[in-house]
Figure 1 (cartoon, rainbow, N blue to C red):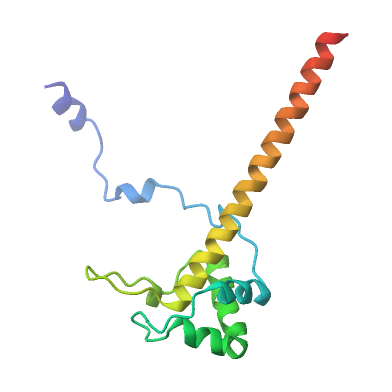
Figure 2 (cartoon, rainbow, N blue to C red):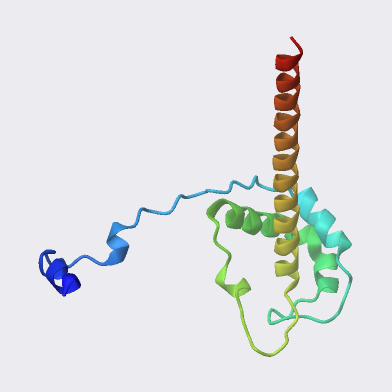
Length: 143
């Protein structure tokens, strides 16, 4: 009874719930661009397998041709880091097991390295701040 009375007092609207949500914060997690040398380092660590995913490109082929395509791969990865958008071609989902593309392996390792570096820096800064706070706290009570 109370709910019906309350709802009758609320004016109707054509707005959807999404109209009241704020716009998402763009670049809420900043990842610096990478250099071709970082891509090369990741590619060199890949196992030279002849198997391939839906792109039909093996890691062995990538390792043999990396010098010719490193600028392109670096550019695509940096665009993905800048925009937060992963190319649709790398978002293939199938219920059957498929091998990852060589490119998606590289992107995955770039993201892993960036996140580890960011988390490490965060915890180092937190530890420094905590140590400084404890030092100030100790000095306060020794005088």
